[in-house]
Length: 94
Image (cartoon, rainbow, N blue to C red; front, side, top):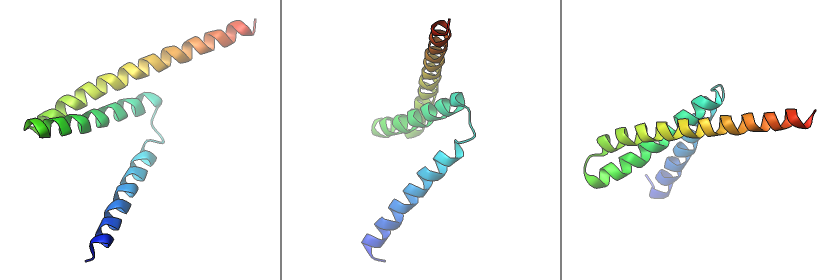
C-alpha cells in the first residue's frame, strides 16, 4: 500500500476513536466525565513517563491514580464554584 494512504487511514482512525470516545461521554454526569478525563489523561502521561523510565505499565497505573485524584479535585472545585454562583444569584434576587 502507498505510505500516504496508510497515514490517511491512520489519521481517520484516530479521529474516529476520539469522536466515539466523546460521544460515549454524552450521558455521563459532570463528575463522571471529569473523573474519566483525569484518569485517562493521567494514564497516558504516566505511560509516557513510565516508558522513558522503563516500565510503562507501572507509570500508567500511577498516572491513572494521580489523574483520578486530580479529576475529582477539579470536580470538587467546580461544584463549589457553581454553589457560590447560585448563592450570589439568590442574594441578588432579594
